[in-house]
Image 1: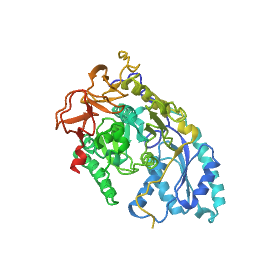
Image 2: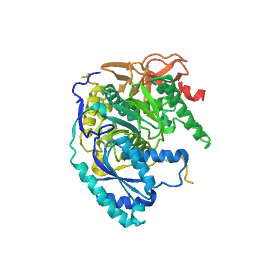
Image 3: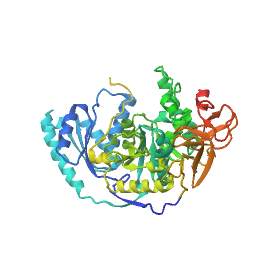
Image 4: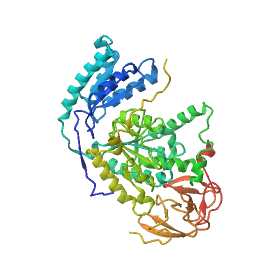
Length: 391
Length: 101
């Protein structure tokens, strides 16, 4: 498919290691729930910085601890982060996270910990502001330069979906995803339980048989975990509202959801927050709640999110500009929330190929610095997902 | 651009998502004739019954036991013969996934 009007480059921030940034911000990263408020005070004193502060950090074991560490390192090494100030309770943990971030991103990382200031949280704040200020100034001089769209890594999410999502917004984002993958870009979708009923279709699109089996196994594993709670996901699914809206089977419902990934071969099944080893389309075995799902995408390195919605949904990633897409004729007019109005598809006034060119151009604009509504209004957040409870 | 359709004021009133599909989706309450967008072509389907917005109808006859195809994929199996232009929903299609679980 040729789309000669779509730019092949965007203006981004070249990085010493890893994908280019679509933003260049100082990240204040609170890695322990004991210093959350101090991290908030430091970030508030440094306008333009972004704050991610976990409420956890102690009493975590096994896979739960690994998953927490993967999110901290992944968010710290995010392509849109120019430098990181780690705010910590103890220095050894901070150094371990800092080394993980530096190994993956080769970007400047500074640490301030309660260890350094005799457990004085106000001294921690003052030291953090000075260290963070120096980092903010350091990265402020970096210019945007032309970079190939192959550098782009899209995370695609859907939320508050309706009939317009499966018919239009999801196939539209899928077409944009296909275009970027053809040009060497990277795409991820997640929300494992939204593959239920369509896992055979995803499996057939896997680049090899082992990946196909991993897709099916991921769904089965979560389905089993849910059924041990006494819940049958297939009972009443599609539910009453789905059936009333015209959805007949679970396959139809899930096919509508996975349409947002497009039709490229699936290169791997990623663990939660795991960076993809190659370009192309990947699926992430992760939770279905958008704030957690998108934090997994961000921690794996996605620098732009596409978020399709029917009725509207204001949630955005903090680190990756989130492009809200709706084809609902009323919701799409909510211009303080919807970044791309696809309702002309519903009204029959535009074709999918035309609309795809428009969406691709919008993606390039946002990658090059155009603010999303979520950025304008500060809707972005990151939510740490857990695998178990604390000990 | 597609031809005008007087019943809706826009070009078409139903869509086909994939060229392999044997069902289309109504974009509004349809009672008589569906004007279907299929890629760049427009085709008319005479409906056997009213079809609600978001609901499906058959683009061609589907025999009992044959797959119902949407998004280019089987979304289930026809449980009875479905005539061209007839509604396709839970009364005449069943899931493959649920029946095997």
